[in-house]
Length: 99
Image (tube, rainbow, N blue to C red):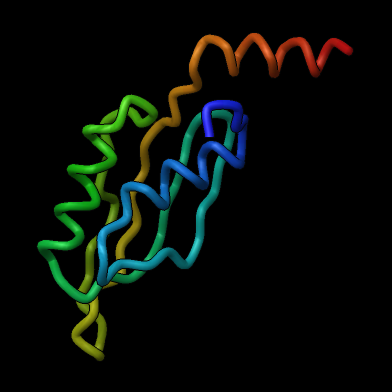
């Protein structure tokens, strides 16, 4: 896990933060800006997800863009945050691009 880089690291960290009752429908990464969309069955589970992302050293402070109840009483959401690469990952990525 320590040697994971780039997208693999992002997916791992995003999934670690996910509580039960929440699933993602899309994940978009543009540079370091991450947009996560999904569904959640409970508002508390969503609050836990935001807290978990915020507590992780790999994510900047999450911003909730939308949180809406759907017809089936689940909630759809979209949130944004920045993914924070470790200095070693940045150096490795730069080396790979140069080579």
